[in-house]
Amino acid sequence: MDPVSNLTIRALNHLIQGEYWAQDRLRAHSGAQVLIDAGGLFKLRLGVDEHGLFQTGNTASDPHVAITLPSDTPFRLFFDREKLFSSVKLSGSAEIAESLAF
Image 1 (cartoon, rainbow, N blue to C red):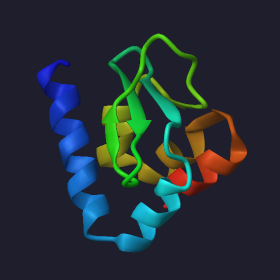
Image 2: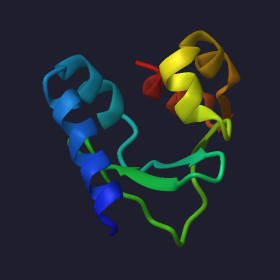
Image 3: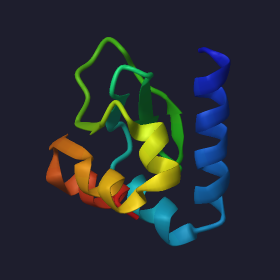
């Protein structure tokens, strides 16, 4: 796993571990695979483990949920967050996507 993915997963898990309700929501989807595609900037594959935390995703299987961000995500993150969040595209399992939307 590349260092950026490792750091991202560790940061996400740090946030989730402080929010037991979020961990409970994700635990219900243990084994789920998530793809985050940041408009060509990077792709991150995540898996949900039995503890409701993220781990490195399985690239050999199709993701249950795909989250696609626009190519100008870094700009929007700092200057136009409202449009960033409204331009995110979700595909796949609605139930898992809803659990990720915490």
